[in-house]
Image (tube, rainbow, N blue to C red; front, side, top):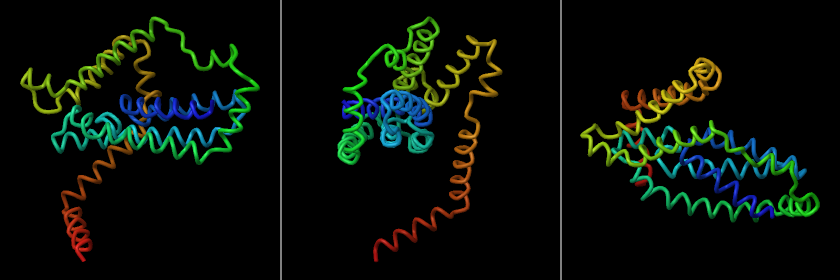
Length: 234
């Protein structure tokens, strides 16, 4: 049913954003939503909005969700486990509330999609759209991705074990994994860097962090904080 579809895309969007960042999750999920909605001949906008909301909620659940999480972790001395214990449960509660509101808000879209699901059903075309053949390259990619996640999730314990600075593994493991991929796919390494990296997104966050650092260095944030605290006391 359409309600199950909303729950599934919301859960996948949130979980993907916790592991791969919100940008990757949105790109992947929006493409999937467009394909499925096109097959069932329904308006994709409600489901895209739901997917984006779920992605943003999920991105706050772990340190990997967005660059802001990494900045907070590095400045506040928080670990991946701290996010799992404190942020993850709250994000899941927010996700459940969002799904409930979305199902109520988009009743008309759900009714129409249910009608089209009964009429069209599932066939080989839909199966091809939602299935990915388990090839050798996919398996290797998943292994690299899995190893990266294991090291990041256990980074605090490994840093203590190996006597490293806090968050060293958290910040360097993605670079190590990227290097392994470049070595594995060395024939296309230049193409990956020139065409497949979201440089505009990276530059946006670089300048965003630079702007935040500038405001802190000049004392502007301290002035704003004092003004806000004085205003709240009144």
